[in-house]
Image (cartoon, rainbow, N blue to C red; front, side, top):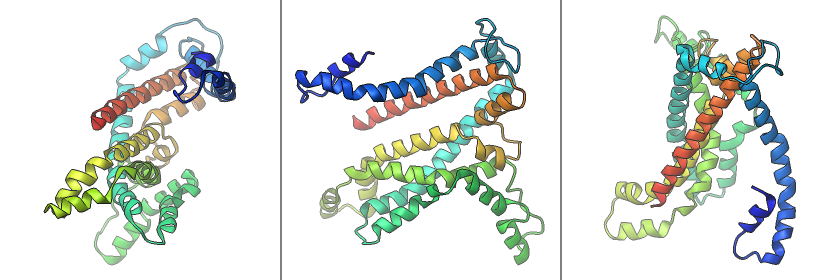
Length: 295
């Protein structure tokens, strides 16, 4: 779509004489998107259809061999399942835990509201790698949890909390919670205390007020937070690789392995395109959910 066509779709309050100016203002942003996203994406698509030898990016003929190998190999189906399962579990946990926090921050009138909101998103100021290493210390066999339980005599042997799927879920849930809180906070503006007061006057108890007023009005924010967590999780690499101890295989870890270990860049590109297709499917489902919520 050209810049002029985009300008023609400007809001009605923008006059026709102002549309050239709108197109001019859009041009730098569109150029930046084209250079930093569209061109690399097209190059990635080109590589994914190449049959170049490992260690070579350019060259080769156009072929579907990379996609055929991925689709017909059960190992990659397990990777896809692990990726979706990990993202789904983390999405449910992070959204469920973050919702009460976001709801409290959206409704409180405390003078400490700004401080509490800052504390809720403060983990974002720390690198994901640092936070992941922190969880490795906490969940290891001699970590804080197992060490405390062993010292208290509650258990005789440490729990297997590290280097597995559970460790990746725990770490990713905590790491992605601030994103869920921020997304839900932006979507909780539809809450109206007057509706709750009217329902209370009509005899509704707290559970009915929550289930029939607060929760339905919160659904757009919950859906947005869940989408953000899911998308960030299916593209995660550092946390599953470190917390999984090399035992948790997802798209991110396999793309990294193909690009750096085996130097099979064509297969890494094909996996990246498939991951992008998964992104698109998730966005499509999100849009359908949002339409049903609005209805």
